[in-house]
Every structure is written in structure tokens, then in C-alpha cells.
Length: 306
Image 1 (cartoon, rainbow, N blue to C red):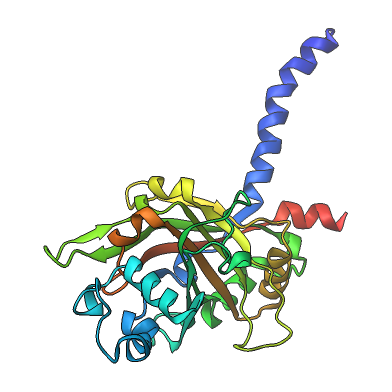
Image 2 (image 1 turned 180 degrees about the horizontal axis):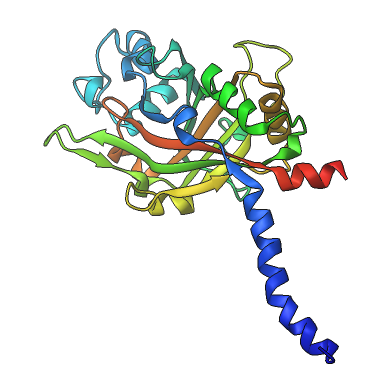
């Protein structure tokens, strides 16, 4: 062929698909059925476990005026009132064993932060824009077994001897459910109250032994409030763990070493003052369904070896 430009144009379509194919062919997802599936209702602690002791001090074991006859139907507004009476800004609850032993969870930690009074819990009552938050902030943290023995063996088989953390192209969480639910005491109907939040964040970090004085906070945000409405069984959403975060690097290093890995999954829920009477803890919790996904890239491994 005498026309070099024509020859170049004819070859170009053949070359480009080949490059795309090589990159796609170099990406292998670890089979999802070999990685623990997180599907559970993370229940909030009983209200009596959080603030029941306040009644003994404040009202001789009786409800103060204006409170319901039982805390079983108490709202976040009532919890805030009791915490204010007690002069505390935060209550915490710990539960080492979470649910059925077959569920890969442990070490639940819940905090209720009273952000109702100006000047109270100042450093813990700032919203995502840096402004003071007024209401109740709920923190929930639980450890999840991201990589168990079976998953580790499958990952090592997929890695085919590669030991660079860069071999892991993506670590994703595929959410089918992520909702705060509670049971309406009048109807017994389970309802979702995500719309009552003014702020929300789900993320992950390193799982440290409880009380470890050397623990370093490497929490990495994954899901923000604006994405909650789009998550459903019919419209699952994938969220990639930030590959540049310190936690992601430690996680990748542990996975390629063949470690069995526990991670700490946290949630921050902000309920503004005007919605506190509509939210209850008893009978409620966070309904979660997510599948971790790990993608191995042999193209990246090959590039890094050159």
C-alpha cells in the first residue's frame, strides 16, 4: 500500500481495541461468594442502658414531668432531656459479641452525643461544613471480618504470586441496603427515617484492639448522605475505597500478605433538634446489606515490574 496515512488509519481501529482488551483482560475480580457478605440489622442499645440511671438521680426512679411513662417509647428528644439533666454531653455503650456467631461482626461501640446546648460538646458538635450542629449525633462503630481464611486463600490464588499492593486495582463496597429503620409503636410497621437526618457518613478504618493506646485514626469516608436515597435492592450502588488513603494502603498490604483482615466500619448520624421527637432507638437500628468486591489488576502488576 503506497499511502502511509491510509495504512495508519486502517491499523488504528485494530490497535485501540487491542489495548482496551489487554487492560480489561488484566483485571480479575475475586469471586464475591468467597468474600464475607455483610447483611445485618445493627441494633441500637436499649434506651435504659444509655440513660436509665439518670432517672434514679433526677426523679427518684420516676419519670420527670413531661416524659413518657416508659423509656421504651422514648424519643431522641427525651434522651437529650435526660442527658441535659445529668449534665453529660456523651453516653457510650459497648457490646463485644454482636448478633449470631456466624455473622462476621464484633466489638460494637455506640455513642450518643448531646449537641443541644450552646457550648456543650463543642469539639464533637461540628457539621461537615464546620458550623455548630444542634441536635443529637449518633456514632456507631463495629468491626467486620472483610477477609476470613477462605477469602484469603481465594485471594492468594487469584494473585498468582503477586505481592505488590498495587496489584489490587480496586476495593469496593456494593450496597443494596443502607437505612436507619424503626418500628412505629402505634402500627407495628417498620419505617425508614433517613429523611430525618441532617448529616450522614459511613466509612471504614483500621480495627484496633479495644483500649489500644497506640490506635491511630485512619477513618476513610465512603458513603455520604446524598447517596442514601439511591441505594436499594433494585438499584445497588458501588463505592470505591479511596486508594490514596492511609487506611487503603494498610489494607492492601495486609491483603496481599495473606492476612485475615478485620476492619472498623463506622457511621455518623446527625438528627437535628426539630426531628428528635420523630426518632426512637428502641426497636430500631441500621439495616445494612453490602458485598465487598476486590479487583486484581495484572496489568498494574506488569507495569510496576517494568
